[in-house]
Amino acid sequence: MARIDLSLSLCGVKLANPTILASGFLGVSPFTLERVGRCGVGAVTMKSVGPRPWPGYPNPTVVANEEFMLNAVGLPTAGYKNIEPEWEGMRKLKIPFIASLYGTSLEEYAEVAADFAARKPPLIELDLSCPHAKKGGHQFATNLDLARKLVEKVKAVTGRRVPVFAKLSPNCPNIGEIAAACEAAGADGITAINTASAMAIDIEAKCPVLYNKRGGLSGPALKPIAVKCVYDVYEKVHIPIIATGGISTGRDAVELLMAGGTGLGIGTAIYLRGIDCFEKICGEMEAWMKENGYTKVKQLTGAAHE
Amino acid sequence: MSERNDFPRMVRVAKVVWENPSTCTILFDERMDVKPGQYVMVWLPRVDEKPMSVTYAGGKGLGFTALVHGETTRKMGALKKGDLVGVRGPYGNWFDFAKAKKALLVGGGVGVPPLAFLAEEMAKKGMRSMFIMGARSKDGLMFEQRIGKAAELRVCTDDGSKGRKARTPELVAEALAGERFDCVYTCGPEIMMKKVFDECEKRGVECQASLERYFKCAFGACGQCCLDDKLVCADGTVFGSAFLRKSSEFGRYSYARTGARITLEEWMKHGM
Ligand SMILES: Cc1cc2nc3c(=O)[nH]c(=O)nc-3n(C[C@H](O)[C@H](O)[C@H](O)COP(=O)(O)OP(=O)(O)OC[C@H]3O[C@@H](n4cnc5c(N)ncnc54)[C@H](O)[C@@H]3O)c2cc1C
Ligand SMILES: Cc1cc2nc3c(=O)[nH]c(=O)nc-3n(C[C@H](O)[C@H](O)[C@H](O)COP(=O)(O)O)c2cc1C
Ligand code: FES
Image (tube, rainbow over all chains, first blue to last red; front, side, top):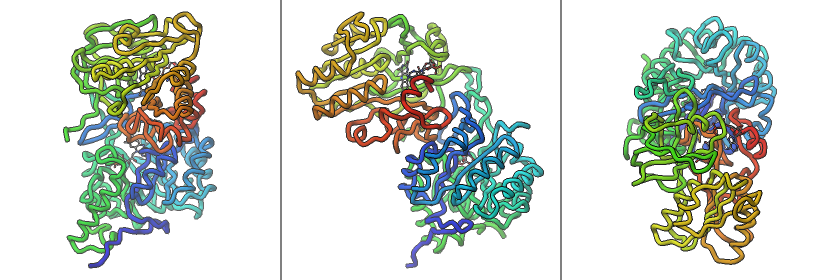
């Protein structure tokens, strides 16, 4: 019986399996990322780091049920100048990490990216869905022109040193085109997707539940949207995709791979299945692959496309 | 497994009781299965949501006790019977007293409410316990009668306005020197708990401390409340000696809302 091989290479970075901790989960300190590393994850993503210290929104910032999670944490950050201990901790990790960053303007993205690139992390991810962008939230991820300019500007400062992934939002009608524009501008990969705009209202309180009122949807309810977005992106680009959104079982993982994922971003599953969800999902993927005659995870990427 | 729902549920305030000039207990006509040491997330719509330790559960309804000092707790202090408040939980682990025969409880300031609940539960099991309560002055003391019924109460204040003029760790040192306790349970300012833990270590007595950090999700997903590789909201809030001994952050560091690691002193100053 052939052994199942879950390993892969993401722009030259070797991962033992495709599961990747999504940005914003357990990424406040390197100690917790290290703990995730002990739970069979292939790579971890830091919490997105911004240009200046920012506390994010007051609570409620994260609520959830079995179908979905809603969050408006608001991208809190100590600011890229104040995360020396994090970098130190990240370098000690036994698995690759992805350094996530954001800005509120093109210039700020480039400013943070230049600092990041000089530290040579294995991979950089640009969170293009900053909700407090100066010209209105989420603009970089939903405006084709801005997304292209942003990636160009960032690539101009990062050069070839570090592969750069652009993380896109589902809150647009043309994610495939936006991904293609990012690729043309020099992006080395696409992460799809961030959360979908959403709101919950408590009817007794007659009031939105999140302090910020509007937030982002993740978890099982996001999965069909993620599958469609990853499918769209895969049709338009040749660079690898970190497929993210609603993965909580091995079957979900296979579905997102078939849509076009090379890596798999996983966040809300931690809430549903615990920190060891990565191990569980990998085990279930392996079992499914065995049953269905696959030996390498690479065989699944884009398998649903004609 | 029951269906998980971590959205706030609106409940009506049944009663507000002032325990001292700056501390009030909010009670709800709610049956919730809560163990001493667990907390709920309390939501005041359009204001904020804060973790609050449960001090009453079961027959008396659900209750927590807030020290009124900041914006949110001031608004909690202004709540009236019939007002709607959101709660979700209970969350976290709890004080484990299954094996203890003789316990020492050490509460400082607004760390007293969950321990008052613990003392009552211990008394129900027929356990003998001693309770050391400390506050800055007599105006910071609370639940003296309630605790007195369940345990042997010793009181101290920083200014000597009631009980001994001393700090709680001094009384702990004396108590441990005088009698054999199986376990020390503590809740209060972390600097105090660190000193209490150090006293326990000197005597080789097990200690369980309920810790506080800034919380967001309360269910172990966001990582805001990290303490070494633990999540205080879900792995805690109660940690035993084995962890406290090897922790590099207990008594030293916490994380600001920005995610920056700051010293405990700074954290106490700026709050969260
Ligand atoms: C698990 C857990 C259980 C808790 N249980 C209780 C409880 O039973 N009763 C209770 O009153 N509180 C409890 N707290 C703290 C509570 O959640 C609030 O953070 C606190 O009451 C401040 O709320 P606020 O909005 O009124 O103050 P804020 O507006 O946040 O702050 C007002 C001022 O208070 C100071 N401050 C804020 N937080 C702290 C702190 N932790 N230590 C010292 N100074 C501070 C700050 O300097 C600030 O200037 C608990 C916290 C945790 C994590
Ligand atoms: C609480 C929370 C915080 C998040 N923070 C970030 C962030 O800082 N940067 C980012 O790019 N995405 C962030 N996300 C989005 C996730 O990385 C991910 O794209 C999304 O949750 C979908 O995946 P999931 O369904 O597996 O959770 C956050 C999501 C949640 C729920
Ligand atoms: S508050 Fe989110 S993990 Fe503890």
